[in-house]
Amino acid sequence: MINVTDAARTILARNDRGGYTVPTDGLYPFQWNWDSAFVSMGFATFDIDRAYQELERFIQGQWNNGMFPHIIFHVPSDSYFPGPDVWQTDQCHSKKPLTSGITQPPVFGMALRFLYETVLATGRHDMLARTHTLFNAALRSHRWWLEARDPDKRGLVAILHPWESGSDNSPAWDEALVRVPTTTKTEICRQDTKHVNATMRPRNIDYQRFIHLVEVYRECQWDPIKQWSHAPFKIADVQMTAILARATADLIWMASQLNLSDALGELFTMHQLLINGLNSRWNQHIRGFVSLDLISGKDIEKPTQTCFIPLIALELDSYQRKFIQEEIERWCQGMVIGIPTTAPFSPDFESKRYWRGPVWAVINWLIADGLRKNQLKELATIIEGNTISVIERAGFCEYFDPITGEGLGGNTFSWTAAAYLVLRRRLTDD
Ligand code: DGY
Image (cartoon, rainbow, N blue to C red; front, side, top):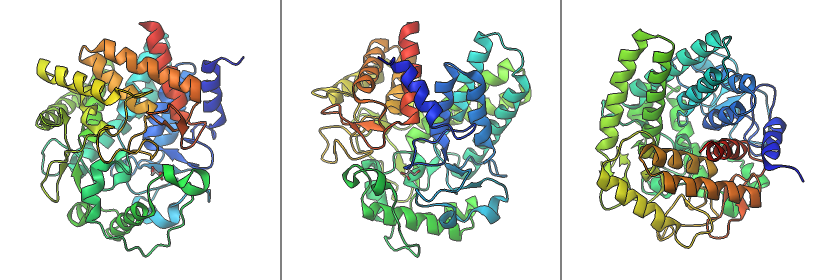
């Protein structure tokens, strides 16, 4: 019988396209931003050179203004929509490879620290130049985040497109998305529903709005200042801000390891701003942290996984810790596998539809990390153990039905394989 760790490594090898990894064959045929960061950590558990290469291929797509795009189109493929012909970003960042025009959660800095810790633990001394290059790219991208997506210095970075959040059709975006027109000039030729059952994917009306937003920003020639003033969708997102804050703390660690004192001051200032912003988003009714709709001015009080992600960056006080622990336990009650990405008691909950309920291994990885950071190790271990078990039973699926434990969406998924490798190692080290 094949051992599951070997099977996870085989998935990564199978999805390797020459130094970068596709999330899965067919459905996602290019290099995706946060997928790749998670995948590099999976590789780091057994092949540190290949782990570095994943991030090195990724930064080839970095824009001159510092942005890390959400997709790098290294080679053409017609199995995905929207491709480079829809994004039309080539005149704006004037670099090869072609890319999309929006971004995704900045897990990169967290991954870089994970990789460098592995280098230090194995006593390698030949990785310094490679590490410096990746650090500089990460620092430029963090500067972009604060300049382009928090121009008012709230300490909260905004998403201008639901795809940027990585949680595309989360109920958290419903109210704001209703304001986005459904008209498009582009013909919508969805490819995703050829690979995956349509009931597990966003709806057609969501896609009309997703593409409408792409067209608005394309007409702004992907200029961040114009985009900020024309955006019909603008949300100061606590999930994104938390990942950026945590990644900033990880870059602070990197800068001290690498003796980069010039970068340290700047990173400390960035970090403090983001921590203050996040702390201001605690919501007692939701028992978690809530995002802010910058167009309506309203708090987004939807119970989704975003409410718990700030744990990865913050030191909670004892009340917050207690409430969050109770809340996560409540969400998991009666579930075969937690944590659902939308609370099961919410009217928006759908156990099989993408970000409206299913469990994602990488989200469990992040939340468990945050629980460990906040002295809730017992709960973290339960979540990690359940994630490992569901993968062992259902395979390396894109996501899982929390009620039945069934594997859903695409299969042979790279980031699920990476999550398996990292979580398994973590539990073994405990
Ligand atoms: C998709 O196409 O499903 C992605 O989530 C956008 O990156």
